[in-house]
Structure formats: structure tokens, C-alpha cells
Image (tube, rainbow, N blue to C red; front, side, top):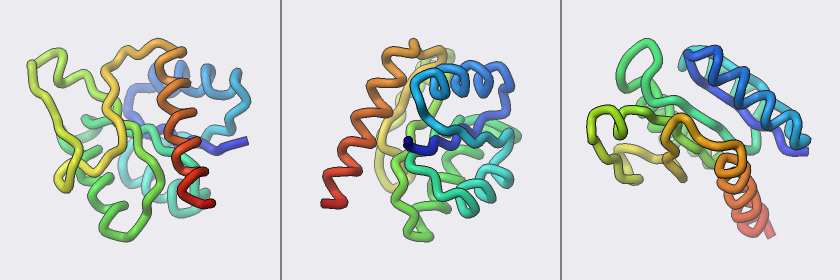
Length: 128
């Protein structure tokens, strides 16, 4: 089954996401900061990354996503955010924010699984 990396400083989010993913047959690796997140991505080469925007710094998630893309790592990224709901800030995918999907925390398990499956299916189609 696909390996998902969950990178978030909120242990409750990591636990909840991991439980949902494992219950649906995914393997999961986790990290609570961008440095460990980068390390697990390089070591484990996950099929998909779930990445929080704000960890130690308000833009840690953005910088990690940019770093991965600059290194040619094209693993799909779903970015967790609660900023847009709290502050009314909207993000657009692009060079500054090189992710495949944005999701607002909290997200229902059904919505998360749909986004994951859609991205993994698209990734599979790209490889053919």
C-alpha cells in the first residue's frame, strides 16, 4: 500500500491522521518539524506528503515544500492549514506555494481520503 508522510507539529493531528490512514490500509511515517520531515521524505520516499503550514515558524510548510520542489522531488503534497479560516487568508498553488492541494483543518476523514486517493491515482497515471 502507499506510504504517506504526515508532517505537523500538532500531535493530535498526527495521531488522528495516522489513525484514519492506517485504518484504510496506508503505511504512515510522521515528523513534528520541517527538519525531521525533510529527513523522513529523503529516507522513506513516501508516495504522498501531508504537510502543515505553521510549525515552529509561520511559514515552515511553505519553505519545506519549496525546498522539495527545488530538489526535483515531485511527490504530491497536501497542505494542512487553519490560517485561511482564522485570518481570512487565501493561498494559491504555484511557485511560492508548490503544493497539489490545500485543506482546511479540521478535515473529515472522507474528504482527506478522497483527496489522497485522487492524487495517488493521478500520480499513477503519470507513471504509465
